[in-house]
Amino acid sequence: MTAVQTTRAPVARPPISPPSLLRASSTIVWRNLLHIRRMPEMLLDVTVQSVMFVLLFAYVFGGAIQVPGTNYKEFLLPGIMVQTMVFSSAIVAMGLTNDLQKGIVDRFKSLPVPRSAVLVGRSISSLIHSSIGVAVMALTGLLIGWRIRNGVADGVLAFALLLLFGFALIWLGIWVGSLMRTVEAVQGFMFTVMFPLTFVANTFAPPESMPAWLRAIAEWNPVSAVTQACRELWGNGLPAAPDAAWPLQHPVLVSVAWSLALTAVFAPLAVAAFRRRSRD
Image (cartoon, rainbow, N blue to C red; front, side, top):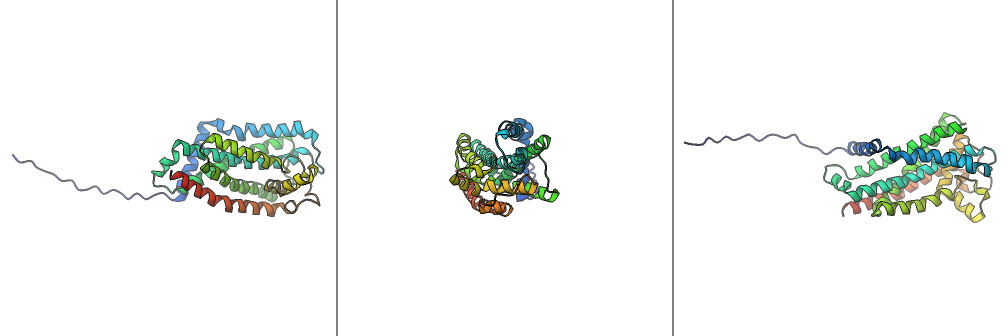
């Protein structure tokens, strides 16, 4: 008795091509946004905390701060929105460090996706996260008396400057998140840097009342330029004082320049640090 051997023809498998950078990045953005939907408490920092900051400064500290040419509520809102964009760098730094620490990035490395998609997806999702906070603060500001007084075009330009500046600082967060080993270390470092950056500026009080040396630091602070640009574009107060530093005399131009310069410096540093860290 002879056994009959049958041979099967090889199955032709369709070629698998890796996704493009755009598709891979959008998938990672969706993955990060799904975390927010499943854990709504992740929005506390840009919803409840944002409303708390607006109401606290407007009604508790606002009565003690005099701003010539406008009321304090209109002076306050642009500064607090810029502060939110600055803090977005801490959010992206902690999120990236958490992914690196838990091995999420190692899983992405085993997939045929561009390595840069992790950074692009993280930066875009963080910008969306921060934009939610700006929208919440804008709605809160409208309820307490803040208004955009210079028309739609200037109003949109101010929001665009906020997003551009926030995107630049996100690369700072990615750089720090790639260097630090734990979320606790990132949180301690970023908030130690972010609080002086946002408070030694014109965000909550006019720099004219500061000592001369501190006023010079505040007026050359990039946060002050972006804040002043938003105030002038929204019509929230007078232009900078005649004796103010050059950045406050040309805030829109300086805001764009600072954003591009910060991106040019920190984006290559962030990519290099991420590559070194993801090779570990």
